[in-house]
Image (cartoon, rainbow over all chains, first blue to last red):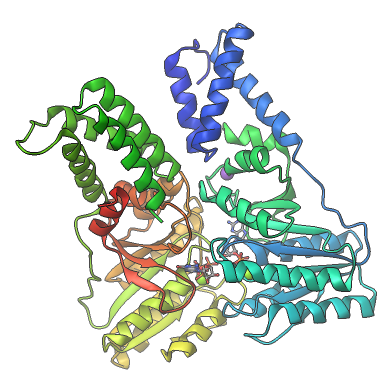
Length: 276
Length: 295
Ligand SMILES: Nc1nc2c(ncn2[C@@H]2O[C@H](COP(=O)(O)OP(=O)(O)OP(=O)(O)O)[C@@H](O)[C@H]2O)c(=O)[nH]1
Ligand SMILES: Nc1nc2c(ncn2[C@@H]2O[C@H](COP(=O)(O)OP(=O)(O)OP(=O)(O)O)[C@@H](O)[C@H]2O)c(=O)[nH]1
Ligand SMILES: [K+]
Ligand SMILES: [Mg+2]
Ligand SMILES: [Mg+2]
């Protein structure tokens, strides 16, 4: 892609690269369109110049949507949502450790009472991060587990509660409505909370991630995205469309299965990776 | 889940139809729309390009058949091409040995453990004596997850919770299956990245030690453009005999079906359509192709 003239073939290749990074058809075509205009306007000559302009564009866009986690309130609650198998429980384990290392007291709520051994999985993470966990029995009402956890948090005067929820597909009404119930319990018991509602997205996901983000945003105020499994070959380009269309900030990336494999989202690095 | 794509393709074809006959310019326009629709459905870019090229050649080369409109002809060409890419018919499991062994592999969180239990229940219903085992020595509570699923369907689960060698567990499970007269052994493995050499080696080692009749690659229907590279890497480094597409109960357009089948040539044998153990069906490629075209 380096050292070439700007011609039709180059734009086509660029389209291919954008789409292969899962940036999506609509956003990719839009970006190419803008690039064509910029090429004329700024009299760009080489492929390298063009690529720089594109990278700048994306970095600017994404830097508006790179946010820090809000955990100043004590107590504060972080609710973690997402479709099946994206990495919610693992992310919670990693996050608990980071917050604990910052000196916060952290409590986990095992509100996935549906999936086999989901509770025990979170228990292992609680042990690894050395934080407390509140759990109900398998099949229990998730909202009631959350209620118990909030009471426990308040009683002990701890700082942060992180709530693990069952994976749910965004096109399943009944499961989506359950989120409202969980959130209601939290805000009734601690006004103003949850301060963070994190939507976990798998970087391997294609266009469907937009549909996921839309549906979760519609049902509740998603405050940020965690993009997991970026240690694979997928680029996770779909967050570009999500940031620009849905204006949801991206807060963390997951880059492995170990407890330390969670990083704040860095737009510069992310964009460089998109084209590497 | 293929409905949206079907709509787009039909509209594209509809536009061509208005012109009455297919000249190259109209065809190109129509094909561009079909291309974008397929890309929006997450079919891999390169798979789409080949697909469109094939269709174009056939459409231009097609002789007009009496009584058949040009549009009907294009629809048939697209349909045939989809069927060709997806596979001609539903492919059953190929279980020849006694006991037969099924090994499940795939990325983290794709649905291997759930699918293991679904398969066990299906085979049990067919009157087979089934044994499950998990060689996932990594993920927290992975073995317990399979154990609980096994309890739900009353299928025994062989576990060696303290063993640190995944291939050894698989081998021990096979010994047990042989000794106790099981018909089928289903082996659930840890999720692994297609670029993790160590973990790919482990999977290969497991495979070599238990000689599975079927190695099923479990793929999430919501996967995007990387699906081809992932499937290809698993096929080349471990080897597979078939594919299970999970989470088809989502609203994903499932272009991944075309991608993984297209790139590996391996049949998609089953579809996961929910979290419950009964949410599992054979994958019928011809039906899917017809659905894409709304036929
Ligand atoms: N390679 C990689 N694997 C990850 C990452 N995050 C999570 N995983 C793995 O993905 C799989 C699913 O993770 P979970 O945390 O169980 O996902 P979940 O969203 O809680 O799943 P459900 O509760 O079943 O919906 C596990 O095997 C994790 O180890 C990551 O950043 N990189
Ligand atoms: N909606 C839906 N969910 C599914 C389907 N198959 C599996 N799941 C869910 O997807 C999540 C991950 O499934 P698992 O079976 O744990 O996946 P895995 O591949 O074993 O995961 P790892 O062992 O961590 O690599 C769980 O929440 C399952 O309930 C399906 O067909 N539809
Ligand atoms: K990556
Ligand atoms: Mg979970
Ligand atoms: Mg598993």
